Image (cartoon, rainbow, N blue to C red; front, side):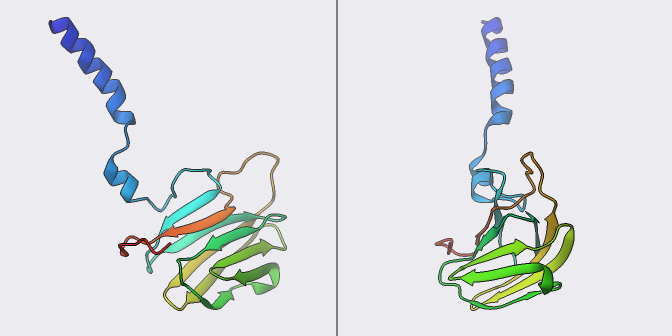
Length: 145
C-alpha cells in the first residue's frame, strides 16, 4: 500500500504545478493573456504606462472599453506615425523603424498612457509585436469590454 501512495504523490507532484488556479484566470497580469502572443491584454490601471512594440509595415489596433469615445490622442513624435481612431478602436501605423515615443489617449471615461516602440520587421515571429491591444477592467462588475 505504501508503494501506491508513493506513486500517487509522485503523479500529483508532476501534475499540480501545471494547473492554473481560478485566481490566475480572473486576475490577468500586465504581461497579457495567452491566446496568440501578438494579441496583448492588459489590466487597466490609470497609473500604468503600457509598452507596445510595433513594426514598420504592420498596423496595431488598440481596443478600448465599451461606450468609450476618444476625445484626444497625443504623440511625442507625431510625424512618424499614422493614427486613425474608429469608434472605440485606434489604429497605429509607424512610418519609420527604430522610433521610440510616448502616446496619451484620453476618452470620455479613462486616460491611457503608452510607450510605443517601432522595430524593424523580421522574418520570424516576434512575440513582442502587438497586432491587437485590449484591456481588462477589473473594477467593473461587467468588465466593460
